[in-house]
Amino acid sequence: MAEFDTIRTSGVAGARTAQIDEGLRAHMNQVYGTMSVGMLITALAAWAISGLSVSTEPSAYQIGADQYLTQFGAAIYASPLKWLIMFAPLIFVFGFSAGINRMSAATAQVVFYAFAAVMGISISSIFLVYTATSIAQVFLITAIAFAGLSLWGYTTKKDISGWGSFLIMGVIGLIVASIVNIFLASSAMMFAISVLGVLIFAGLTAYDTQNIKNTYIQMAVHGDKEWLGKAAIMGALSLYLDFINMFMMLLSLFGSRE
Image 1 (cartoon, one colour):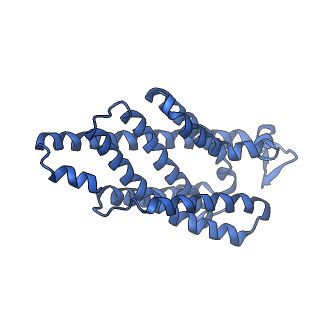
Image 2 (cartoon, one colour):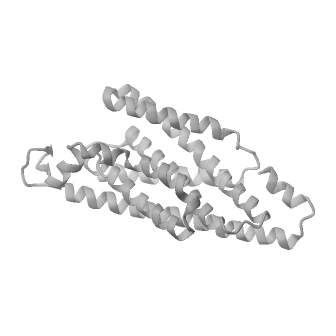
Image 3 (cartoon, one colour):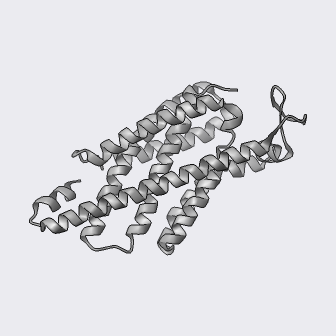
């Protein structure tokens, strides 16, 4: 943020500043656009997988009144395959982050959309656990909160880069606690994880938005155009993860179960 203010006041030509401003708006539009497409892919994948997993025909796995898991549903929700599906997005993110330097921008975009589909498969069980109405309501609440936090992160003059290390430590703590709670199945611990998760990912939404903005400005000033396309995709990935995780935490807190 400080660098952006310096650019504006250090004698840089007005035309150059205007060019950066215009490029920044286009860059942020690309980030939000890519993220939105990823969200749509996730929603469609989750809906499609959940639809294939449930039937009214009796089976060994009854999940509700006149609702049973199909063979496909049993395979992904009630077999050891569920562990792979559960942790696949985490593995995907680490692999994507490590390999993006060797990818073209077009390849990185395809990989991001593939990741969004994998995430959809991973969270598809929400359609079996929560009512469709509560999912829609929590999604709307998340979208409003995300928009406000991201707007604040983009417009604030306050440098919040110092939040990064604390928020990342918080995310690591959430991952560890969530893995532990898979085996403990503690409702109190799940409640605490959800509350802390909402706060952490709310902070990350503002932090990541400002970081995306500052990263663009640094690259634009130094003329590093080759990386900008991939930077937009990585920015979309960061905000996508903030949104998805905040949504899942809020759904755990406020969602109405079937």
